[in-house]
Image (cartoon, rainbow, N blue to C red; front, side):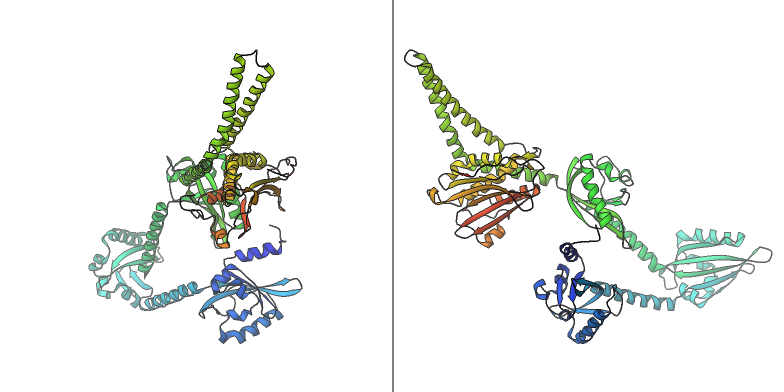
Length: 623
């Protein structure tokens, strides 16, 4: 990213920050707050913008705060978090929040501003308080049983012990010097201690051991001891010097950490998602599940590319590179190896892994959505067939009329051929031509139906919207003609990358909805308008408008929610618009709606244009 960013992007970045971000002008008025600030302080953005910053300061501190703020604007400087005294902020409900604040001077045109990054440290304070309490306990324990010291005179076998050493062991010197002391060692440690002691006496080899020892009170403790030898002028070992400390808590913490790691690995292993850590070189460092026919060791240490089809690698590489370079998370759908097979669909989040503030790798959280996507495909196909089925009576009528014309024309031609003397060949040819024209009409209807019955795995390609719309309108003609006049206005637009069947499904749903929003029997009083154009962003727009009763704002808010419908019971599943929205967003577009009660509704399908020449202009026409 370049060092120059637009104001909109700059504010967008501030709004996405996890810390509360507040922009303040000289005088203390708030200019901008992000979503995290709303969540932290309990105010809506509109309540804070224009309010004094002191609103977020406890009353007892406001006077000092105002002085500090004025001083900062007089001598602005960047101030990192954790500088200065501990700070508190005020929530809307009056409670105080311990915070850390970072300040940075900025400018908005010719006026000085300050950016305040505010972090809630309530949890950190709690942890620090707990840590301080633990440290006090540790200090008290160290005072009672600090490092113990002992010394052995090898020649006389006489030992001396510091008071701390005896306190550590919970024994008196007489017991420690007696053979009974070895009974205080854990049975698994006795041989190791004896061997190390004999070797140190013999050749002066020092040692460091962690061993278990039973104190005089019967408690088993972990003791760490380090021993070194002292030699005389002749090089012989004369003394052994040792120190010891109680490391029971450390060992327990280590055991707890080992157990916690084992528990974490068990939880991750039981998670339904694949969790994969890759380093900056793209090598897999951790995976919570094994792949079919591959052990854990056969996966860890290899490149993630080894498990992704070539056609999926570029998209995933972009997401991983973005996590490593920008430290941001990307969500995408990819296809790769999995438990369900070599072509498993995954909904994947790719985010950064940080250590010490540095991005050291990326984490991939991938959920197998193969079954969900298959179900969605079946649902979309079922909805498409339901839309066609809803028109079945009209389609049957559209076929029966030309079919009757074909049969009648051919019957008439056959009768006339049986009596050629009474009928000219030109008359018979005209009858056959009429039958053929009717057959072509049937062919067109069947071709329109085929658009809606293609396989779900139909590949995307450039699609001319006018052709799909014309096919859709022919399918819906019987539904429309008793309710409204149909007006089309096809402005020149480029193709879009899609499939005819999916687009036809969307347009058929919207056209049927528009028709059903109008009463039957008043076709001259109502109009359905279908138009194409380009918007200001160069996207292709298909508009389907009706002059029906319109919708309330509440209905518009819920209309894309699955199973929501305003139709009477038994007329519609409430899935049509939800499926339309999913199809369009899957093509990189969006559906927008405007409506006015009593005047009608306009649905707009916005789609990215393919890089192809625009079709020739078609004059607006009504029918």
